[in-house]
Length: 286
Image (cartoon, rainbow, N blue to C red):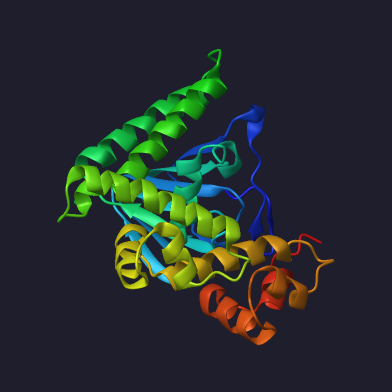
């Protein structure tokens, strides 16, 4: 199923200007560690599917939906039998939507929506994928419009489930909605300014909270700490810069917001399992 693999980098080709590459996969083939710029959706229809992403083994069962962030290294161990949807999606086609951009910046390394925890949402998302499959393999007019609308619907459901105010008890609905909007803005702000000298104090002031209240609420809404989110945003920025071999690793460290090359190398290896130089060599298309 991997069409073009160079080292660990897979080049994904989207056909006919469609925003997805869609497979109904029933192969027992396992796939070695690889990465690609588009994101990936894996949704088993029968039998489970084992995915290793960010050094974590995730078993995805029928009715579950796994969304892997763009550029994440992952590998797949397939069972002898089974059927699943595998969909690569073009993040750039959705970047114009602020909330979608926030969702993808918060996605790293993956998002798992299980049938056990969210049966209704999962069913609606599976219905989107089923309709997308029909459109993808048809010759109907406005096929790209139909698929894009289904993709938007899919991520609308995923985003609202992941960040729904009702999952954060203890405050009124209006207050929950206010916090959701405010922290969506905060996460977008961090992603846009991650290469700058951001601090917990400055960002909590931007959000309008004390740093202690902000720290608690941020972890509640984003599922991680402020510092982890900021570091992840900087690593993602650095990974994009590493694709340009003319830029030195030292310069990339500085341009990505790290105060020293040693810190950059250490943090990058902690998150990616290799140094920036090793990452560049592994993913050099030449």
